[in-house]
Amino acid sequence: MNMKIKEYSIFAASLLATSYAKAQGTIMYHDFNPDKEINIDDTVSKFSSFYDTLSYNLDIDNDGANDFRFELLDKGYIGTAAWEFEQMTLMPLGQNKVLGDTLTANSFFSSNVPYYGATILSSNKTINSSAGWLNKLPEPIMLCERYSFASTNWINGWNGKIEKYLGFAITKNAGDYYGWMRLSVNYSSKKYFQNKTIKHNQITIHDYAYNDQAYAPITTGEMLTSVNENELAKKTENLFTVYSFDKKVYIYSKDKSAFVSQISIVNLLGKVVYETTTDKIQTVLNPILTTGIYLVEITTNRGVFLKNVFIN
Image 1 (spheres, rainbow, N blue to C red):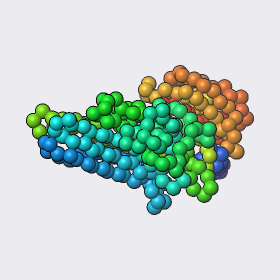
Image 2: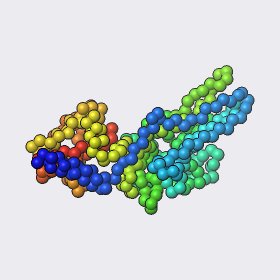
Image 3: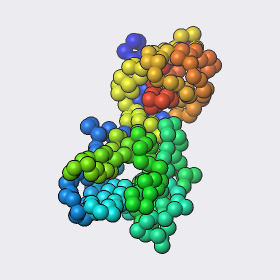
Image 4: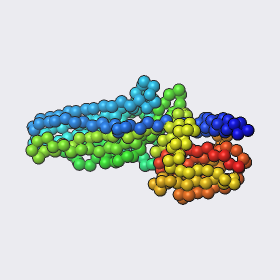
């Protein structure tokens, strides 16, 4: 009898995970370890011109085709009437898209064409079909740009932003797959001669994730990599204690920095049967559900965590 219950539990958990994955999609997460740093590092001499470019291609879904290209440009003259032009851009390749908008200012060197900028997102922002998508533009999408002779201000606001999110969509099989990248964008000061200082741009890619179901939304910072029960249990147990007793569900946070914003309970068919919002470290739910195995989804500032529970 115990063996049959155990076998049923394993089967039901697997079925529940599969049903949930089909209904919600699976978040495919990639962490750069160490972080990927894209920066120009060179040496220039006094009374000379310099022109440096650097590009980095990113294949989001590892299908052998590059999806996005980061480009850095640094050009100028060191000496009397010194000037410098710095630019950091992102180009969606093929039919892929980046979340952004048209800017009111024009590029200094391309004043006769439209000018576009990538949107800066904070955590827990939903990316879906209603977002403003940019693709197939006459110029790359701007992260930031500055012409130091004319102004010390950067056009578009990415410079100095640390661990902010960029929304993207990869397009394949006639569908859009929404995702996010977590970036830091800044410049570093390097002294080359006497008291002269040149500032060089740097983009750091920390990680990214996308939903493997076409047109399914994703939340910035959401990083669930699999609906495999063993992996989910490891992730959840590190942060939460989740169990059921007397038809109630008890959730306790082990880490006070993991702020819970929403809790959902999903049945074997992948349907959300209970949902609530909370900001408490300890939560007791009374969902009034029939006896069976359910999936508890906990949405936090650290990502989304899942745990199978048997409610009786």
